[in-house]
Every structure is written in structure tokens, then in C-alpha cells.
Figure 1 (tube, rainbow, N blue to C red):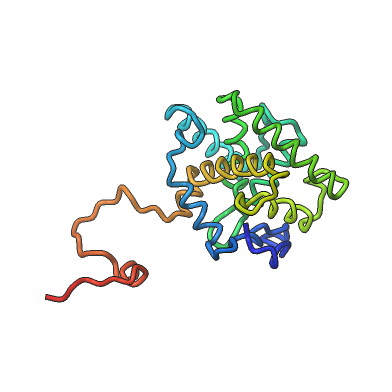
Figure 2 (tube, helix red, strand yellow; figure 1 turned 90 degrees about the horizontal axis):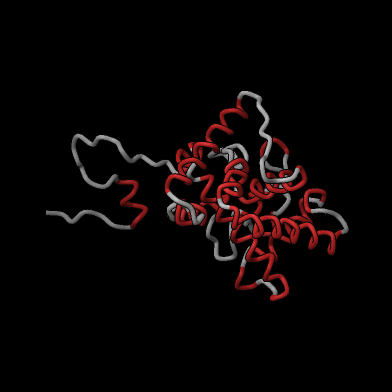
Length: 227
């Protein structure tokens, strides 16, 4: 999440920008945190088999391609209201920025819908968490999460995004947000868009090894010894 002092700034396309939460209190960027989370294998992170993870990624990539052609996805698990909330929350976690598209652009909500059907034991956690989010928003602001203002949405997410400082009374919300954020990051960085976002350059033939690139050495603060 971005620092709350910048919350609610307009993002790409004039949408509320939860990239307004791109930095945590320690100064670590949202993308750095999510990239670290993406290092966890998808199958392990989502308690599924490698084959299940592969199918989920395929669904996500097909959904992203279908959206580019103007198609519309019909969720198998989520209700229409839940689907709206999932899409909003995923894009608050990974918004569109100058480097790549948002979680929704990458097909992450479709990925989550597939996982709910593929791993039924995750359904109660997801549906209960979405209900908690709406109930908390109604308690504070008198309306469902998707109907709240960007500032109101930010206020709730800031209270549950940092487990170490979250009030004990919000423990259910903290658990749900961690779960949802893990799924969002796992899905996004398994997508074609996410892999490109990571600037992954593996599986590339290197005809000659000339050492670590100079920009990388400077970033690490090291250099090759002379002589």
C-alpha cells in the first residue's frame, strides 16, 4: 500500500489510484514487496498442484486476451457484487502504472475465480473475507466497499494491510487481506504481463560471459577486483 498522505490521487484513466499506497512506512515500494512475494512458487502459495497452477495461469492469460478483443468473462464462483469487489480490490493492490497494466488487465480476477472452483476449500475464506470487507465498510461509512469513496476504501485497507500495527479487533480483515494480496501477487506475476513487468530475461542464450553488467554492479555497490 502507498503512503496514506498521497491516497486518492487519480491513477491512469482517471481511476482512483491505490498506487497511492505504493510505499509502506519503511519506504519499500509496493512493486518491490509484490516481486518478493512472487518468488514463492504459485503451486505452493495457493495450495494447489503444479497442473492446477498451470491451468490457472492458462485461464488468466486467455481472459486477458479475450478482454483485449472486447469479450466479457462470466464468473463461475463469484456473485456479480463479489466480482465487482474482487476487481476493484485487485486493482487497488496492483494498479495500472507507467510500467504495466493492473491486476485486472492481467486477468487476475479470472485467475481467482478459477482457483475458487479448483480449490473449494478456499471458497469460505474468500467469500467470508469479502463479506467482512463490506460489513466493515457499512459499519464505518454506511455503504458497501465498492460504493465507498477512494478515501474511505483507503482508510479501511490501511488499517488491515500492516499486521504488526493492525488493531486486534480487525484480525479477520488482516487475515483476509493477506490471503487476497498473496493471490493477487501470485496471479499477476504468473501472467504474461507480470513476467514482462519483472523484466525476466531467463532462457536466453549467452554466447559469451563478460561479467555482471556495470549498472547491476553499481546498484549492488561492488566492483570487480583489479589485476
